[in-house]
Image (cartoon, rainbow, N blue to C red; front, side, top):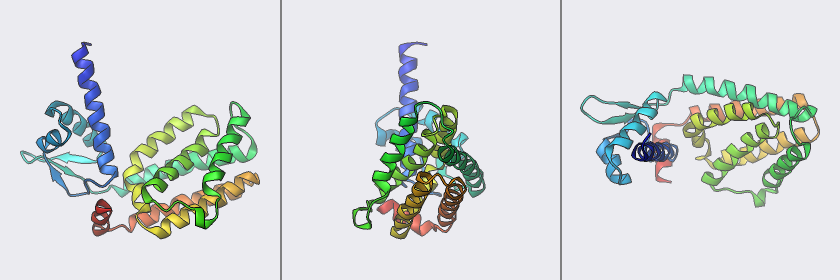
Amino acid sequence: MSTQQINRVSLADEVYLRLKQDLADFYWVPGDRFTENDVSERLQVSRTPVRQALLRLQQEGQVEVLFRNGWRVLPFDFERFDQLYDLRVLIETEAVQRLCEGKTRGDPQRCTDILEELGRRWLVPKIRRNIDPHEVCVWDEQFHLSLVKATGNAEMLRAHQDITDRIRVIRRLDFTQRPRIDATFDEHGKILEAIQKQRSDQSRMLLKMHIESSQLEVRKITLHQLHQARKS
């Protein structure tokens, strides 16, 4: 592969990641239309890497090409998201069970350090809670990824990261409302306390309820709220 080809691939990857972030940040919302030229001019790149990036997003079911009329952001496919959430529940409940039962891989101290770091962030008085929706969304992802990471199972973590990437756009909707931020702190705190007390069944139940509650709240989001999220 030539240097020019490598640079083209790298640029296409950069454009792909930028467009993924645009979708997650609600720069575009379902139904929005745009052209390759729009993207090319905004990102100051040629149309080739833009087209490559959009084809990847098309394969992921996030956008579609319109005959002679550019591209369109697709409506949320809740059936697909439900299937991904099912996988997420399986992985995360297995992770907390292993944490409670001490069935982790690698250095036990590393697992302890991860859980202690989570405690410093989530087990805090209400007055010290972070209420910035963008930061809390990032923290929420890190919380769930950290639970899986603490098991020391690299393949579980890799699968969980893939799911996290694919549901990020819809998951962020959960943090457009202040009550959901408060609920996230409450629920994360209870999960951590149950893990600390090595209560496996309780940890699994709390985690499952937490994920399913978030999933249900996201389904209530209206198109109007999506546009409001774009403005925030």
